[in-house]
Length: 499
Picture (cartoon, rainbow, N blue to C red):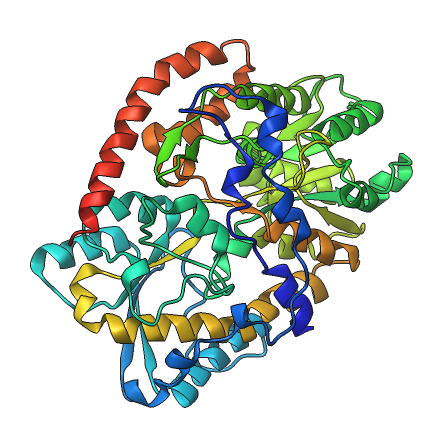
């Protein structure tokens, strides 16, 4: 099983962010040329458990006796998308909770240090207040990407590429994240096996097997494997099945819709097709590409699939239903066999355990068959690990602790989360394992989304709902202010590296 788990987490450097927005200076480019950069991602091979990418360097291993009695003080988010995979007081019969406890026990017994978990519902404020006051109580800060990435330009965190004992090239760190979120070769936040949140925040496409069988839908797993699982295929299937009224002659929450969605799915489909808000130039600096012609084509397909002919039910259009029933209208439609496709993040899969009909998992559909690989959108609530600049005198120990924590998480936490929580309890067939393998190994980390320059991510979702007819005016309206925000971010980010 360990060999299979390592296959899941094998991410090829340089493949992910090069897949989209391959234009010059943010101008429009040819779609077919953009897709030619993704070959490396399609050739990921299984690795054995002795692969050096999943083993700690000898010089780090040799420091086992050097930090005995130390404590890693972690200030961590307990609010929205809490960092609840860091500490457990005692062992548990719940596999993931037990894995957290066992990992921390291994850190104590094998490496000689403990963990002090300091929870906060407002980590961003706490760490900034601590910096202003010169308080050195925290070694590591863990909070949501949507706060962590903008905070990286605030001059209060260490560049992780300079931290001793921390090898960000190891596969237990998310390699695609470094490719997507670094600036000028610097990186102030990281995630990977050390946290379950990147997996939980990865969006997937579910399909209802009963509905598929009732409508003679083709083998969707085979479509993924042969590269034909595209937006056009999903649209043609949805059109053939069609919308069905429940008898009251009104479009409503109890009707049948081919597709069940929520607002975030617009971005999942956007990134799945190679859409990008920003790209990297030759100096590893972000460049706005919101006006790229691929984005226009991508948005057109999303609009066609989700906002025409009553092909989709959007949970956010029926929020009173959620208040009344305690479940999104889109989720209820899928579980009640009133929808074929359902998009959500992996963290919501366990919520489908009570579903009577079998379901399967697919990656997000590609733009077309010329797109070489499938890509996954990662929700901005995922946990990011950062080191305060005030802790730089303890950087040797902190780097050692994070490196060993990530390594041990690869051996304990990731298998428990992936294999037990998602599969043994939730998934109904082995093919879904392979499908999640595809989705998890091709996550897209776009600075244009995570740094939230001018809230372009939210604006693009709103623009999708309007269709592409006014997209040119939208690009013209947002470009100048967004480019100013990018320049300001880059300047501040570069300045922070000198601290």
